[in-house]
Image 1 (tube, rainbow, N blue to C red):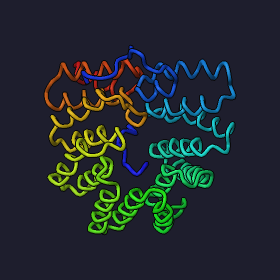
Image 2: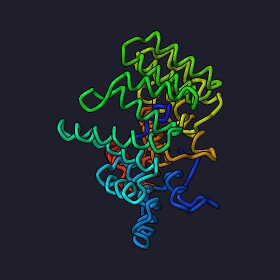
Image 3: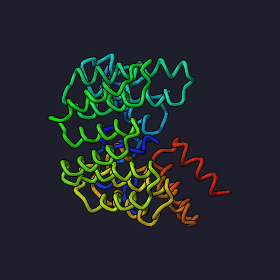
Image 4: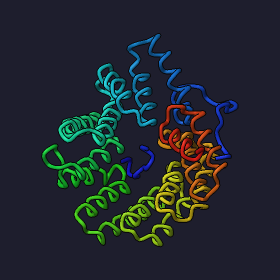
Length: 321
């Protein structure tokens, strides 16, 4: 959850395959969205050093970005086995178990959900100040049924722990709990509190916008999202998430395009919003605007960075008919 409900779990301007002067290490390749190169590099590292826990974790994250849960799980498990005291490795294993659970049968999903809870709880125990781990664990507690370890009281305990670590995130978790309870007025207050204590951060405005989208309050959604590009940009992927909200709601698509292009033109590309997915979203935006050739170009750019990214493959086939 990362105290920001990133939508990318699934541009003419920006990063190309040959980025001059770029750091060619695997983490940089993943952050820049050059996932095919990252996977090839990491397979080479692992072949030379099979017990490189960091390489296994990064390979898992590369497959995670592609939505290839089955291919990534074994590497996340291997990273945890090699470095059992690494909080981040447990966090990523919990995340990929969670994504796999969303596509599994009921019985399989229940077993995976218990693993998700266990991995997130271990991540928090190993690093109590790990905000991402606490917020992901809180989201699990909010959404999961009691039979697999969920519970709003547990989520409230995580929110209380976050108060001294990251006050804005604490308000965010409290907002999510209020939403789950159906207390939307309280949730809205908490989102505004997160904006206040976060000094008007882009991610806090984004979360308020997503809340309004869930409530089908689309004018308020747009007003909140207008702050994302002009506010303190605490997370550059907030630009991409704001664009995706607009795309899904089919509201202000020109603004969505500008947000995506601003992100690609920046020097702050991050793993949570890899370039290949951003190009895919730009293609989707052009497609909705009726710009077929621009859409084709963006889908091809996406696949030039991640040839196995199935959403871009399917979209290209659709617009090329």
